[in-house]
Image 1 (cartoon, rainbow, N blue to C red):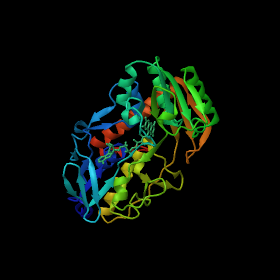
Image 2: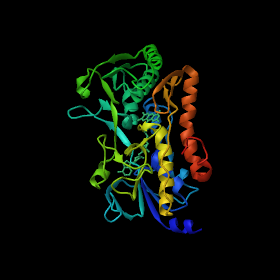
Image 3: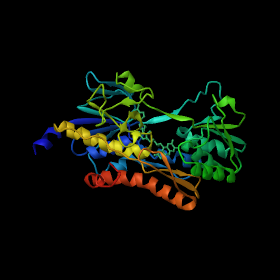
Length: 372
Ligand SMILES: Cc1cc2nc3c(=O)[nH]c(=O)nc-3n(C[C@H](O)[C@H](O)[C@H](O)COP(=O)(O)OP(=O)(O)OC[C@H]3O[C@@H](n4cnc5c(N)ncnc54)[C@H](O)[C@@H]3O)c2cc1C
């Protein structure tokens, strides 16, 4: 009872309603008063943005619906300043909100796209998938995906399958899919070739004008959205992620918790945590859990995580499930073809199911293995 009273009435501001922020907000409710700030009125399944570029159905979910059975208040605005000195958040439209604790979950974006001098109808990223879809409907020609990581490959296969009038080229600095096994890579290569994608490995592309093509889809790497954290004085590492302790508290500002792609997290079994939806969900839940324990005067528990697999779609009818060790290193075992496509689809649906479950039964969802 005493514990409940010490967190009740406290105000927690969660910035960012992606996988990590939304999950943290839902797990915090109703133990504290929660305001969730995000400029969008919907949650975007970012892991499906390549499907948006292919013209597949909407990948967003209204926050109003997701939050309807909760006490979480959604403030539709962009955060422009975090004043850690006065524990206050400012938005671009003039709101100021005081907080007892803050959860920073602003995610990441595609990095390294220099569009200076490039026509806006020529260069796209996953974030501009809807515009890319419109552009691809408007004719046919040559399309180059820059970046041979999992996201670039998902984009290339999906676009080749859905827009057969376009000649798709995948250019990457090293070899494709460096994170998967040789067997996995060989499967990816055969699917790309089968879909008519020209693979160019060992090709460094500095900016969109370096490639002779009609449309460039830039997917070189991701960078965390931590500019507001840096401006607020939070300590970051050399990858620009916010340095946190094992409870996910900022090392420099312990009243700020960090979850998702913005956090620099490492665990003894997994090593460094990669930016992924698969990690953002458990990080969001753990940040909420630590924060409530902290407000109740209890010591937060360390974040624990072990990898199990990397899942990727290769168009709608093929995929790759790469089984990995606890530290994300690829093992020999893979699943391919239609079974892999089905598993990947179920994994992606599972993320939204977890969020819905959090909204209705936050305690029950804490019992799902791997969800926390
Ligand atoms: C095409 C694609 C495919 C992917 N596939 C996979 C996959 O198969 N598996 C996997 O594990 N990962 C995948 N990822 C990576 C995954 O999407 C991210 O790692 C994940 O979205 C990170 O979650 P997050 O909550 O940290 O941030 P995000 O999901 O990026 O959410 C951040 C939120 O912050 C909000 N925000 C940003 N700035 C502000 C501001 N100033 N004020 C208020 N709100 C703000 C945004 O609107 C957004 O809602 C993929 C990514 C892409 C682009």
